[in-house]
Image (cartoon, rainbow, N blue to C red; front, side, top):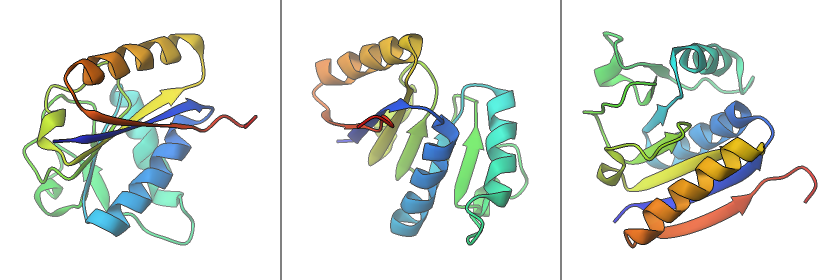
Length: 141
């Protein structure tokens, strides 16, 4: 059964996503990042070319001809046919294919709307019996 971690109260969701991608790639070998939309996919793609400055994280989008051999996939599309180890969700709803993955990281920004959407996702998973862990990443803690 998928293990789900919620990372909440985040000021910069893409920065935390990059940290989690780096960690998951090192530990598990592949990662799928589900972004909110095409603009976020492009922004994350650009940031992964320069962050972290001391590592290269091999990544591409689902529509790339290299997606079958690239360990880190980014996209906003609700589809996934590749390896299913770690999924990082930046969307406001639970992904329809999350249960294929061993681990799911839910990223929740610190604004009221994002926190409310995060609570709804938390209750969705909890009602279905998933193991949930929460990590509050507020700058004030």
